[in-house]
Image (cartoon, rainbow, N blue to C red; front, side):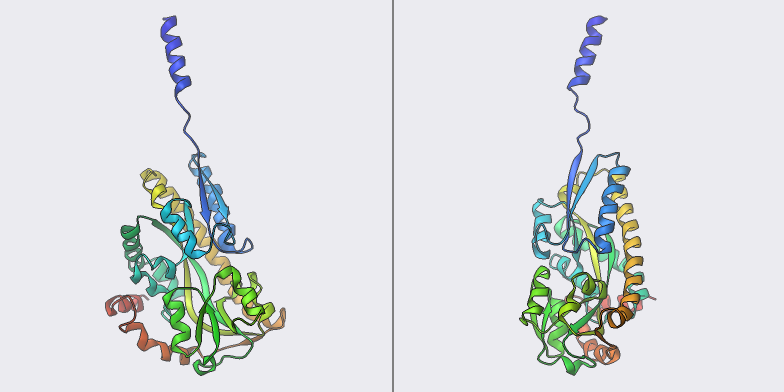
Length: 320
């Protein structure tokens, strides 16, 4: 009997405890932005809800590379989770880029319904099937507007403007159609490029314009409202494939809660900043003629140069 007990104790001692897995979450945004705040919140919740089986370190502000690089790292397995813009995810599954097309959405409510729709769910599933990495939540990034050292009221005001854009096709579409010169530059280098006059203008949501201090080197904030942008939280396939069904549900639930919290803050911030840039920061805020811009872009949204068909475009427009 004594021998049996000793054997049992020895076997228990040899059995390792459940190893904690430390995950790396990479993104390109500033620590002051809600996306980062709620990535850190999500890390705490994942640890709590998995009994510390998974912990997560968050690397903001391009610490682990620019957006193209962190997407590559996700596929290589050197990064475990990322936020990425839909235009970058669309390199894996091109139709996904429809949500980032200029003047695709009527307003925030239209985008919100799209973000919760079977239309987007199907597109995200298409991305998963192609690359093996799993999108688990859609975050509202904000409506993109154009800063410059001049007023932009109508599309023709952009002619010849050197506009910094992210290096993805739909961002390049925006300046191209209105006769501006698209200049792809990494996100972390934009402030310097504006300061040095390498480019004349850039485009981003108002909270990003504030966080990255672009208003310091641009006199006009032009409310062009051209792209309603979304970030996607994605888990690398090398992690997702090892999660149990319950753990998968936990990751999805946590990040969807994080998205709701972040979205509410971004909407509130956008509303406030439309006033603050003029009153608090001394910039000229221009209410651009959005209808004039939309009229120019609409024919291109169902043309031969976009990676989606008219049926998908009609589905997005039919969302009420």
